[in-house]
Length: 102
Image 1 (tube, rainbow, N blue to C red):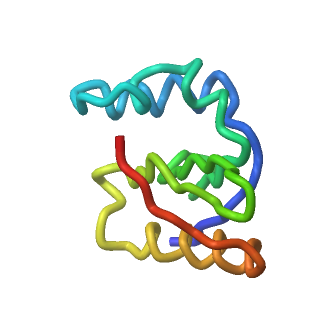
Image 2 (cartoon, rainbow, N blue to C red):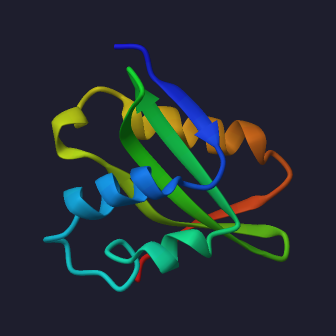
């Protein structure tokens, strides 16, 4: 499976898919479009033009706070999370990285 990681804002269509996939996960962030739109950076993993994973990032001075970090269930165990992290680290070698939770 070929996976591409993009660094951009989520489209409304991607947000709809993401919200539908995580609707049973109780969190003040993952279930609302307006929360996702506020992230400074979003890393998006796609395979065959399908959303497979995503990570929202908030910039705080010389830090990046990663939250939430989502890999859709049917793509677990395929290295998607590792690929997202590798891209985040590669693109931000001069930043401290903190994985947060809400």
